[in-house]
Length: 339
Image (cartoon, rainbow, N blue to C red; front, side):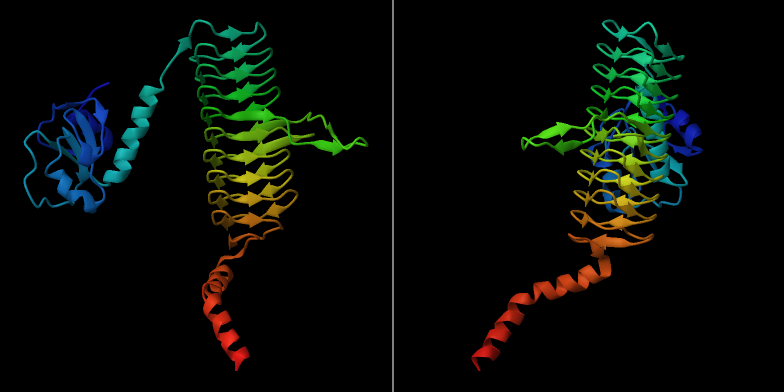
């Protein structure tokens, strides 16, 4: 797809300086700008690149005063906020790129499936009995949709996603490649022979609207009832959410976060990378947990935690300062004992 500087300015309510008819067909960072690419300058640390870039169009703030002349091949589009404007263009670009429709060859669709309008099914996608697929859903190649699965409108399912039977996916969701939704929860009971008997996992997973699930996430089905990911949740790569967990609205989970079974996470929470949360606990709203922390007890609202086991962030920093001084303290103690 191609856009002119005039079209971009119209979309962003901006002003053109230079050739309004210049065309761009790709995006680039300003320091790597090439002919026919569109870039932006929001961070003034990169301003020097504005005067040397080969990008054909650069979006800048209206109030930016130029220190030098730019190349004659570069057209400026001045806007109120360059960063927000470029983000808006990225959204438009992404919509165009993902605007696929139709059903490719070698796709299996069971006769009992209900399919909405304007969908896309990639090659080797498998849609099982009684699945319900909403309008404008995009399901990329080699994805598996199990029996009785329901997928809401405008949801995007990338290649290789597996959604087991009876799970529910809301509207406007994004499931990235390799995510597994509704695999069995980790349920085993010791037996007399010293082994383990599998406990059937007969629940499901419910993912509400506007949720984004990162690549290679595993969200386990409930033993009974539902594992629930509430509206607006965002997860990073390699996140594991165990059976019967509830993750509250607009909570964000960074990479390799693991949440054990039956724990409840509040709304507007944030976890850093490699956070571990034990089972059967409740974490309140607006809680922030620093990376590599381990949480093993209930947490009240509005707490900031760090450490393993995790505790109050200010207390952790004071304790860490003392810990760093521990060798010198021990040395002084040894000298005192010798005296």
